[in-house]
Figure 1 (cartoon, rainbow, N blue to C red):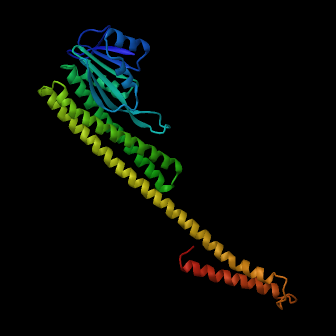
Figure 2: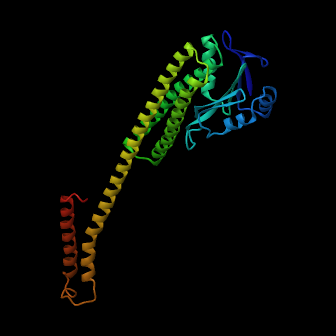
Figure 3: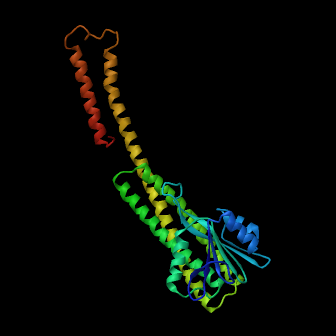
Length: 308
C-alpha cells in the first residue's frame, strides 16, 4: 500500500505522485514495487535490502540515489519467541523524490504521521524528515522499553510467590528482545553520526540532531539498565532454584539414611539364623522397639544438625 503526502504547510494526502512529495509505502505489493522501480526509477536491489529482516542500519549512495536503512522497534505476538524486536525502515531519496518503505505496519509510523499532522508545519526538506524519523524511532524505543520493564516487574512479582516455568520463559524472551534493542540502537547511533557528514545539514537540522542524540543515548542507557536488571534477576532465581533443589535432595538423602537403620535391624533379625529370640514371645516386640529407638535417635540427631 502506498500513500502520497504533500509535506508543505502541514501533512495531507494527495491522489498521485508529484515533485517533492513523500511517498509512504507500507507492506509493498507487486504493484507498489513496479511503481517504485519503473516510474520512479529506484534501483531494484534497494527494495531487496529493505526486505531483509537482518539488514543492519546503514547508508548507501548509488548514481544519485540515497538509501538509508533505519532499525525501528516492532511488536510481534506476545506468544512469539521474541515479542519485541526490530525491523528495517528504508528511506530512499534523490533530489525531488522521497520514499519510505517498510514491510510491516507499525505503530511508530502511524504515530509519526498523526503527530506531524497535529504539528501542521510539515517538513522543510527530505533531510528534515529523515532526522524526525530518527527522533520518532528513539521515542518509540523508550516506550517499548518501559513496556518491557513493566513485564519484568510483573514476572518478578509473580515469582516472589511461586517460581513458575512460564515466568522464567517470559523473562528469557524479554532478554532476547533487549539484545535486539541494544544492537539496533547502537547501529542507529552510528548511522546518525555518519549522516551528519553525508547529508546537507542546516542549523535547524543540527538542533534536531542534538535532540535525536539525547533520545538515542537515553534509550541505549535504559536498555542497558533493564538488561542488567534482567540478568541479575535471572541469576537470582536460578540460584534460588538450585538452593531449593539442594534442600530437597538433602532431605531425601537424610530420610533414606534414617530408614536404612530399621531396615538393617529387620534384615538381621529376619535372617534364617539362630539368635536366641526366635522361640520367645518377646522377640518380635524387642526387634520392633529397637528399630523405633534407633530411628528416633537418628531423627533427633539429623534435626539437631539441621539436615532435615
